[in-house]
Structure formats: structure tokens, C-alpha cells
Image 1: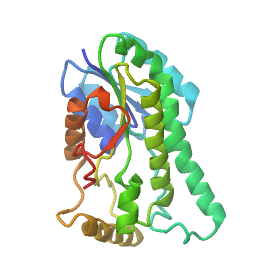
Image 2: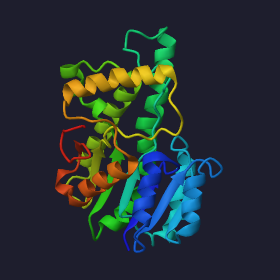
Image 3: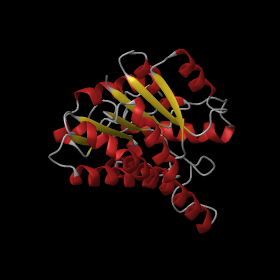
Length: 269
């Protein structure tokens, strides 16, 4: 039975991953969340699907991730086929600012350090914690580690179309892409492959946006439409996850270290 661990499964894209994956009874799916009380949709899904299990950890807490890996061992039979890193941090208050528009350098530093702590170090923590299970599976079959990145981390897109917003987030996701490249380099020639993938622009909002958030979105949408005139707006988590899983399924481990979109190429929208 194929085994999957989805980290950051409480809502949005992560919740949709465990929903689609656990819809197939032959899959064993583990969702990693931080708090059951704030993950009611995931908990409700777990209650109705015997092949879905929720375990608790924050990706900045390495011992907690090691405990999840230990608890997962029996559930996945000692071998893990797919690890999906979805958990991430995106600061919202200063999301629309350019790199030289922050109120002060301390604010920029705090946002950047938190973004790197979660989006870079958190992914390293997660991969390292589950490596023994991944390696055990890779002894006999292809194993895939999939980490969600962002088209905002594409330097060509940023320069060519003047994408100035989401500074700490974009920088940290570019760092994530290098992390994936480093793991791919280390395990080149094995059955263990690493992929960074952008989900596209996905509507995961659970509340009505504030006027500031709406203004920032309109500015971002204007930039996106300049880069991709065909773009009609955000896609749903259901569509995004379906497309990403199709990319993962056809992706070959010989291309380990790649950074692609939900289309499987460099078309970010």
C-alpha cells in the first residue's frame, strides 16, 4: 500500500492533499498538524477514514518531528513512499511592501528570520526526521519528497515583471529551492528523489479580506496579469492539489532537484 505523510495538513492545500490521497482506500495517509482543536476539518475527515491518521508536531520542533516519525513507523510498515512538505509561514501585515519600504530594519529582519526558520529550516527538520523511513522504502522502489515552493521564488519572474511584494516569503522559498537541490545532489543516483513545486495562486482564504489585503491582492493580480495575460484568477485547493499530484505521479526521479509549477514546467500561473 502506498504511504504518504503530509506536513501542514490542518487546512487549505494541506487539508486537500489528505482529502484526495485518503479517498483511495489502498493509501495509508498521515497528516501532521500542530493542534487538533484548530484542525476541525482534518479531524472530521480522520473520523470517517480508517486509512487517515493525524499526528501532532510543529516543523520548527525537531524532537516533535522525530516523535511523529517514530509513531508513523508502525502505521506505514517501516517504509515511507511520499513525503509532502506543505507547512509554511507567510507574514501578512507587511506582505505588500517592497524590500526598502519596511518601517524599520528590525521589522524586516524579524519577518525574514521567521520566514527562514519555518520555510527553510522547518523543511530541513522534516526531511531529516523522516529520512530513515524514506531510505527504507527507497531500497526497493522510487520514493518522492515533494516540497511546496512558490513562483514568487523564480528570480526571472521577479526581475522581468517587477514583482516587489512578499519579500521575506519569496526569499525563504528561494532558499527552500536550494535545500531541495542540496538533498537531490546528496542522493543523486538513488531511488530517493526531491522536488520543489509551486501550487499556483490558490484561494485558501477562510475569512473576508480586509481593505488592506484586498488592495495588496489587486496590486499582485495586476502584476500577474502582466506576466500571464491569460490568467483569470486564483484556483481552488481541489484543482491545485489534483494538478500537483498529477505532476508528482509522472515526475521521474532522474529529474530530482527540479523546481516546477503545478503545470510541471515554469508556467507559474
